[in-house]
Length: 273
Image (cartoon, rainbow, N blue to C red; front, side, top):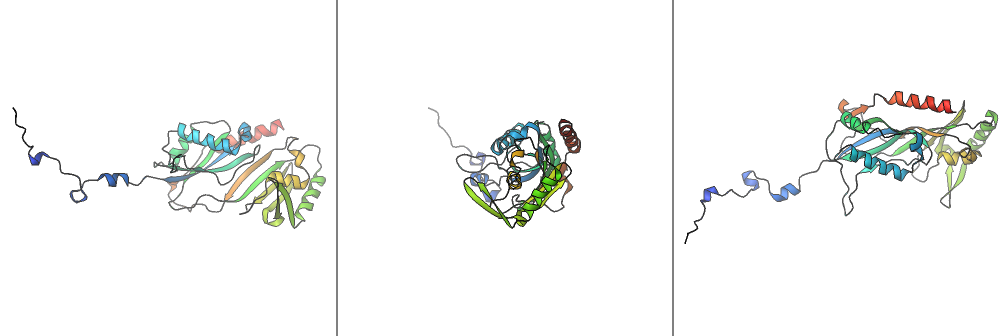
């Protein structure tokens, strides 16, 4: 019968402790997870303007996964990627300047992220720029939006201008929203409304309460039926309450093809009109 001898104590690995420089299991669990936020500006054009905001959010989640990005997830029983929009765009409205913010659990330069997103080549979704946001910066909040509304053939400039003057001359207006009446001060929300050639230019300020939409303004002008007649409502720009200050140039990347893509798109629309 063999005798089992105890191993030499010097051959046994010492248990890791903070005192001997080891990392305990508790410390491994507590290791911080990266959570870096990026702000992406993009265009939503062509057939993509006919998808809902919810479908747009799903499209972005799929795009981010196809790009092979390590996404920062929400906590709880049903983790989801941290993807947020400061403003939902109404169905059928085109945009040349939408904003989405994403949180990643990996560190990428703005240029590297831009290249991965552009490589997807999703029809109707064109990436304008990517900005890495500094730690602690609050989430994007809408300040104002600029729109153009194409004038429908058969409507005279004098008729449109008269309707604009009447609306701007009012103190307050009311619109129906989900079976509720929304009353707002005209000067607080409609900060620009003017006819310029073949478009009506509109600037709407955001409100902490319910805000007017371009469709509401058309209704108030008496031109709500323009939508059925083929008017094109286009969001030209989005202004946010807080933008990052000038910092590391590597934190900002702009698409080199953006201007060409948008100019081609605008020219194509004019030819169809």
